[in-house]
Image (cartoon, rainbow, N blue to C red):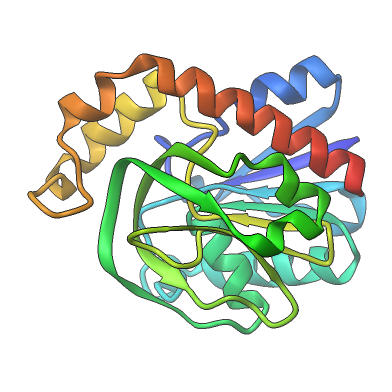
Length: 231
């Protein structure tokens, strides 16, 4: 299986996803958009993974490659490829599918629970998610649920935390791939965002529970396996 990922900044890579890809023996390629690397031909791909980043989906003036990236995501979905978007990646998928993307009422950074929706039980991907699980967040924007998509999870601070579209297009607002090293990098580059707020934790709280990273990374593997079975 040919898997290609899109990376928006140096400090938000594949995390634990890379382990699953390697162990499964899939072919992995990537485009570091911040470095000006070329985008792939979607016809040559089986999966497209779109990672996170601090920019917004409407920041084309500062990041012109966003326009081409959205076109690639649209082509991949149109060609019935498997598409996984995480955080900014989920927002880009939602935008491509015609949904509104905008600033959330609350910035959500740190460990907060998400709850599986009742609709999630109707699809294989949704049933992989626990009824409630504490996951890692780092986002300020959110999106409306795209037409035809199924909401899979919500949190107290954010109504749309995960969705599935046409069984092969998955958007996760939260991060299951983040490792302790990845979290340290996020904090190093985004410490200015760790201001007192109802859903923002200090760096010490984010890094102080290492067992949670193992839990979310295991869940990330289970999600990837379920997505592979569904496509």
